[in-house]
Image 1 (cartoon, one colour):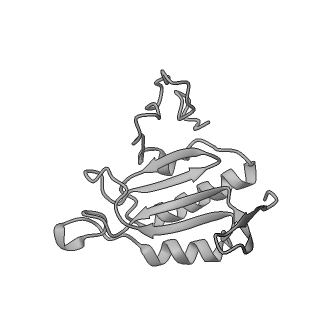
Image 2 (cartoon, rainbow, N blue to C red):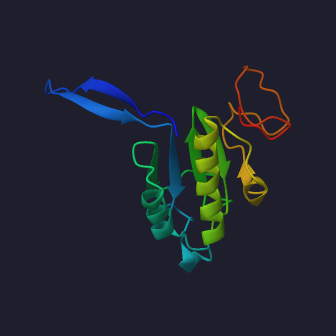
Length: 155
């Protein structure tokens, strides 16, 4: 695993604070208009598993976890956004323990490789592009941005 990078920041009260600069962040939609709303016919979001795995794998200060509200696009439900080294990796329908574990295994593989990697087969069918600045797989960006290429690589 890579060395933790830190950042000294001066707060408005003048106090100098030493904060971690994580490699990435996992955003889990769990309380939006569709995600996890079983009463509306959507699958549950395994929020306890997300948190338990994050702690078990000791990712605090390396890859932050945020479980919260809507990330869009709601038609897909149970959406997860992984930001890793400045790359946005979007996944939908992450409804089962097996998919959550595959997601964490993928994050672990990227940390071990010290690079953004293509989604493994278990996740590839759930990956999509959600931002206009990020080309779809195989598309080249008119703005020169990096994203998932035709070979599935994200960087």
